[in-house]
Amino acid sequence: MKVVQVKGYGGVEQLEVVERSVPKPRAGEVLIEVKACGINNTEIWMREGAYGTDTQSGWKPEGVQFPRVPGSDISGRIVQVGSGVDEARNGQDVVLFPFTSGGRTGTEHISEDMAFIGSEYDGGYAEYVVWPAELCYAMPLTDYTKSAVFSVSGLTAWHMNEQVQLQPGQTVLVTGANGGVGSLNVQIAARVFGATVIAVVGDLKTEEALKRLGATHVLSYHSEQLADEIIAVNGGPIDAVLDVVGDPMFKTALTVLKNGGKFCISGSAGGQQTNLDFRTLYLKHLTFYGSVLGTRAEFARMLDAIAAGKLEPVIDRTFPLEEAAAAQTYFKETGKLGKIVLIPDQN
Image (cartoon, rainbow, N blue to C red; front, side, top):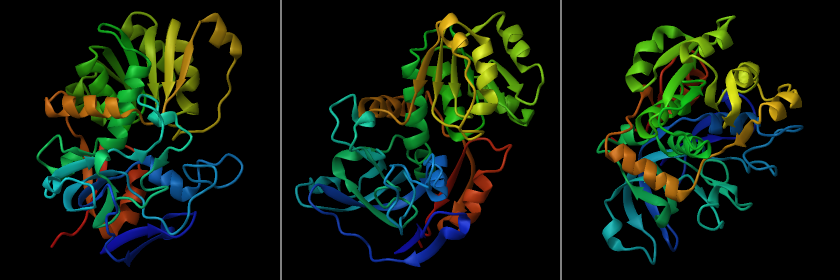
């Protein structure tokens, strides 16, 4: 089979297209023919070693065992089952819950043994992948490409919204609103939890599309009066912030939060370090949440919402699998709306 593997830490030159043997499912596993694989910051940061603070590292401090096949947003069809798996699952169209964990129910995402597909396991930049059968869920939509955009980005966004316990009528600020997680944060906050959404982007050309997804207001982070604009359109301070940007938006986020407000962050694409005046934190009674992925129960609730039509896939562009380097380069450009998806050649 054709795969794209990462041969070491570094730039996109570390991605190479190679041939490998099709893996065989072990007990409790299934073999999936990959039909589509969404791109996330996760595999780019894994390649760059950007999860490390002092040294290069992957998802886990001990680093990545190279070569590694990245990719965690996977949809496909089960074509072979391992021992102990119901033969009736052959031919099922599935999406993959993206990590294994020995953590008890509800704490899977914070267990010390949590291991991520595409980082600790070979992932979906390939024509086939093996995965535990119990972590393969029925595809929520009939289209493989559309179903491949939710697993990581959607679970991350869903968990962020549940973390801050959004209530109908509350106002939430969504940063990076045109990205994979951000565009889903807009939809989940507005369409599922009934919140008023203020979306922040760089390029206002996505304004109408974001309003269609559920945003009430769309503002540009390039504005020198952004904090004042947020408070003005809301008629006062806001209830919560869902952030994926990090440092560039941090000061503004804390300024616009009301007393007792909540700040949740799941990414730092704009900067990993910032300055915090602790007086702001305690005098405003703010609550901070660090958030990565989520639980299997949240994943199931998200899939139900997708199947019910409450959430829709937002896809900017697709690339052939062998053009993964170009796709990751394009991923880091600004002004896009939604996900980038790799499509293996199934001819």
